[in-house]
Image (cartoon, rainbow, N blue to C red; front, top):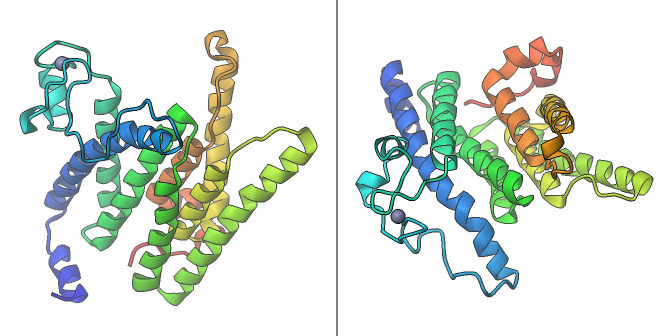
Length: 289
Ligand SMILES: [Zn+2]
């Protein structure tokens, strides 16, 4: 089966069926993203020397209730559905299950639907779904732990470059290569200017690698609207935190905002960039093939 026949058989799918299929796929993959969000930071901390943490991997042990250790059967592992049926509690010990699990699944399913709607029945939808779900994992991990693991950001850079190398025009690959380079260097320079002026560190190296990955996927021209959207999102949250005495002094990681900026642009596309007055930036960029 060659690529053209895959493309052709995908294009035969009726739109509604394709939207449904990708949404279900998004829900299922998002429940794996929940595992990554919970386990990867623990695996890393153990690797970095916290030997009192349990030895786990992404696949072992299988999912279980954190309190009574009852393993989850497939019926208790259905995205969203199981949580709703069990009313957010463990079936055995009635321990509350964190709202984060169904929320991440809901986010994954919604992203999948929007991407399928934006790119249509083709390979791009599947590939960008993988990209979007990796970003979702990064955003939640960064929000909770202030970490953007290299184990996700670096493969994401290479995956974006490879995708455009194999499937896009040579012009788009050049933009992707430049995007990875400028994505890293722009935040790196900003980091040093800020550090030299104020003596403080405004962001971390993970943010540079994340923007490099975004550049590798969306191309250099997209960096401007992405950083602009991320700054608007970051300022709004900073304002809310400032007005709310309870949350003052909370760490404000930038990664989740870069992810929001990237996903909003990926789904909003040329129309959104045009509306922001940044359409010219995207004119030479085409993401789908
Ligand atoms: Zn339990």
